[in-house]
Length: 365
Image 1: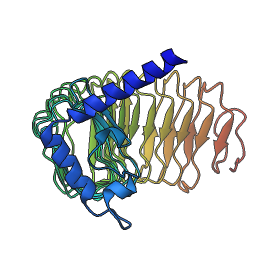
Image 2: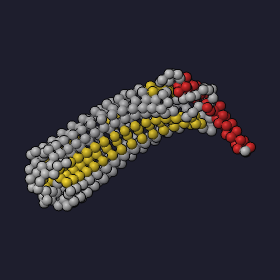
Image 3: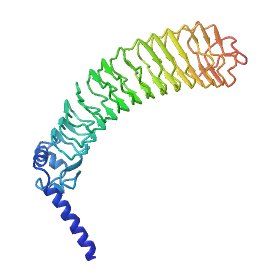
Image 4: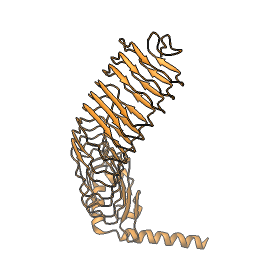
């Protein structure tokens, strides 16, 4: 018992000593923020149930480095408000103040900072200059209209979805693997030279074009609900999923994308569609377009294709040995549907007369 008490006393002494050595600039900055008004009355300190502003060892959500400096701050969902200034926190590694009511954040000159979560706030401004170690940056669901990333040579994941950003340049971000900029007002997005980029989510923006050549690590590309009119996807060996639904596309071509499995391009204005050297293609959705004809043959893994609500008069879908489902509904002028050697075919949705063995009458959904 005595030994246990001595150990607890030692730990408390060490914790108190670390807190006592909290650098003056950090102490002043934190006390200033904690003294500011919270979102629902009282102060930020009161929202965090802090009763002693003079003793950081009692503050919840903060851990300390051996030298007494702040190591991590975790104050998510606490109804905090105001301006958060953590400039010059030299030992700070992680911060999570998501789901609050912060209006601005200054995190400059924090060389050890690796992970930042400021999502779901009211931020209109953020400063992360001099934070070269940041790897994960979450700023989604704020009110940012511009974003200056500065020099972030280790950044691997950036989430700025649901802001008001009109232009973003992350070119030559050699370590960036995931970029989510969905739901902004983006008219310009530059991702050239992002050789490690695996997932790009840029749907629900205002993009009229985007350059994606050379992104050899790209696996998932989502550009749904933009203003794209043409899309040529070529020489992307890792690309698995392509989503370009609800644009203004007239032409879509995929070539030399040897891992491409799924194409979703419904709700466009397509009059031209082609696929070449994409041997792993399994699922193609081209419904609600303006296609009058289509040839998609010899795809050894293709299982499903949706061509409903086009202007088709002719379609050749033959020699697809794994094809199970075809939808050609609401193509009133369709007179020729080639399904030869589609030995696994189970369902054809749409009205027709006599196309292929065993398909002599309409099968409805």
